[in-house]
Length: 129
Image (cartoon, rainbow, N blue to C red; front, side):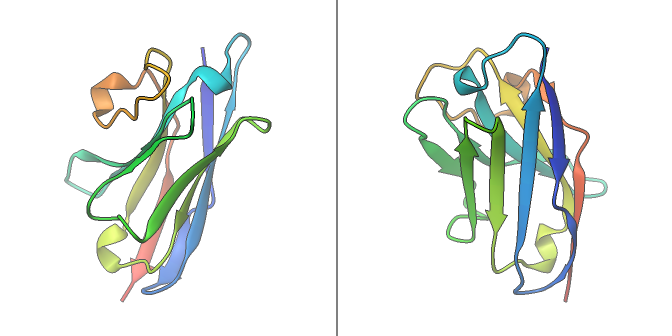
């Protein structure tokens, strides 16, 4: 089992920045063998892919809607994955979820939510205009 806890959400004005972190823990797991992803869900909408990072070589994939503004990264020594969000827009308002996939190949960046086995509770990000 893997437990994921997100932090760093909040209220920010359009054009501002936030940095989300996700800390992973568990009795028996290897963080450096987990593909990690971020998803977001706005009220009344589906949970959408934001970004993913592989467990080998740190390959990354970002949704078109956030490309050039958001950056996913990981620190295997600290068992954390981070989402740096810059130039935020009101349409980025959502609950952001961290997710882990322990079946992905070393260079895979899973983008479908059904591929992820473990999820955090989410952190609210609100961007005011």
